[in-house]
Image 1 (cartoon, rainbow, N blue to C red):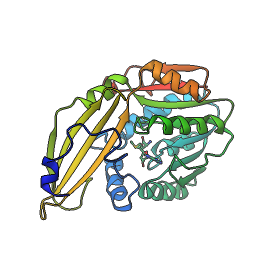
Image 2: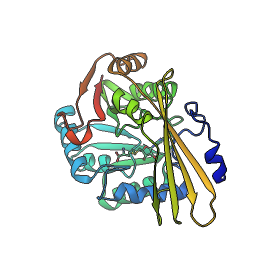
Image 3: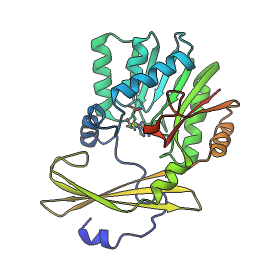
Length: 279
Ligand SMILES: C[S@@+](CC[C@H](N)C(=O)[O-])C[C@H]1O[C@@H](n2cnc3c(N)ncnc32)[C@H](O)[C@@H]1O
């Protein structure tokens, strides 16, 4: 793309029309994203370790009642949840399509001798296997999937559970996705960063499709040396609490409990996400 294509961009892009997600699975992008996952300076990509420690303590104590379990972590990233759960005695499988994250997670599990299997797969096409006590998908990653894809993933999750097993979904609140779609455009510059190893400008704009109830974020990355523009886009489906109940009912989860956060308590730093436990 050229700079003029930014000027001529459609004002209200249709959901998913300009891209499904940022390219988590593209090798060079995933290597740069791994740096963001590992950074303890911010909560982008993954949250800081002190927060993840609190989440894992709640999952172990409140959801699993301290009993050892077989756990499937969908969109596991570099394995920050799976590794902590494995250290508490659980056996884990992590699935993610980021090559750099899966390589990092695999190497660290091997070095520590943890009972974790990591699979580099797309959640939309991966076989999940069976016999899990808990399937989890955290940090709001259910919302970027189209509604039908989300339903298919959650149906596979339900089929992967043992009788009495549970799904743990950490999802965006309805208000958070609506607010995202209404944000003003913004920009930043970087010498190097997530979007490029070369100096670039990142121009961001947002759109809201009221009919579909989908927010779209667009990132126009302008290479400082050449002026070449690369566009990334992601769309997020909004769900009310009833929307989540109905999505989970479609996937044949019958008991659904909402928690204010992955610590079981309101978290002032994380009001845009809720934790949903379904059985
Ligand atoms: C926000 S990160 C969260 C990572 C991890 N759960 C954590 O909280 O540390 C979302 C993860 O979902 C993965 N992901 C997104 N779409 C995916 C897909 N279609 N198949 C597999 N993994 C996917 C990304 O690669 C990324 O690692």
